[in-house]
Length: 146
Image (cartoon, rainbow, N blue to C red; front, side, top):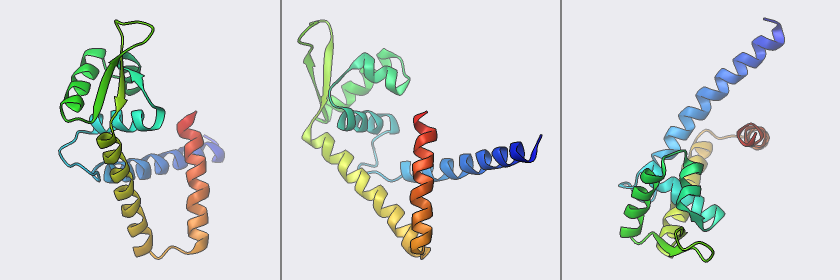
């Protein structure tokens, strides 16, 4: 292994560990404690990308269609999503987020942002530190979107 390989492996390991720990902490912070990660992920997808079919949601979340149907059933019972027949194919169903579901997503995002702001404030990050975090965030997005 070359020095460049060593640096790449070390960076990957550090990034993995930091990302995992931060993601776990953020996942615990949500507007509704009783909601599962999978339910919240579906609501966030619908809020960000709009109406989707159950099969598209299942593919995006990497679950089987029957599992997604069960998730959607639970969200629908809570009034967080609605189903409407597809205009082009009546066998398909489109899933939309309701105002109540969008509110949960917004409140969850606010709480997660507040958690991060609180941590950065407590650690007394300088303007340079914050600029470094913004730059690192941009690089992490590139890796995540690859």
